[in-house]
Length: 437
Image (cartoon, rainbow, N blue to C red; front, top):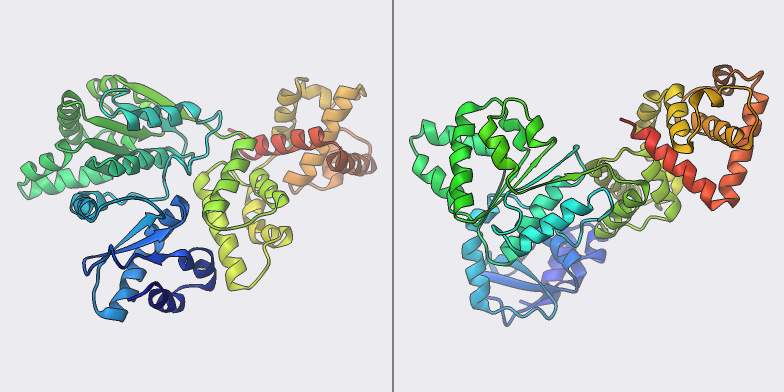
């Protein structure tokens, strides 16, 4: 069996775009492989993680159609030195790990760092280097879709690379396992699973709220691991002290190590996230498209990933070029829903805070340069982000008619074209208005 044979079958089993961008770079290492393990090499970690997560089973099936064997598929980096014995050892060690459903693309390298998540990222990295010693437990908290799970799984993926035993579960899975163990009188197996790992990763710990019996069991699990200097990392949508229905002794233990928050990303970080996610998914987006997505979607990284998948799928299925009109059409319903939730007073309040003037000044008759500029920005954003007509905006701002509204919009567009600083102010304000609260 050769690389050419495998790729020939694989080409017919996959999409042209996936094959051309990623899969054709696979090189089958015949000397290192056998009936149990098929080893392939690729040029970089991103391609390796992508193929592992999406195509391992299909590659396995292709090999089966060629020679009847069904080996485990192993993806390595070109030039990476690893003995066959080490690979076999890893396969044995992965039995429990596979049940944790780690996403191989969630690594520290693929995480976009900005001021909103710098502390949480650095703490996660420190924990990976010295598990059980520094920041134990590590408690990461923040809003939905901001990257907490990414960091949690990056710690897990790094631990696996260093041969450590990890358990990654949501707290709901922990509760289900606990309930099952009680019903089947198998607590010994449950405790062995959760108390003999090197790293315990628990997602959405806030849902432990009010579950008294499970809290009792988790308390003892926590103590066993902590006393044995095993690393514990948890995520939540709020601080331990703010989780209602959580017993005080757990709240205090959750704060023994370090609590680090993940905040809403600024516009620059959001743009960097879109660019990184596009790169990882093999999608090329012009800067104007990136800016459009960044300023029109909310801050959920999951939503951004979903949009990029939709863009890529639409382009592939409809054989379209990815351009701004295509993306605008694809997102129009999503953005329409956002616009319906934005009110004119919201825009005035945020612009006034950002430009350090009184909201009442914007609706006043004042004509100073600062007020006139703020009023122009409000008018522009009102037309961009709401369904209000020009007469509606004029009436709200106490202006005589819509002709002055039209003039201000025209002037704002001219400034956006020639003044990079004004354009940045507009994009930043759009981001804050869309993601207010």
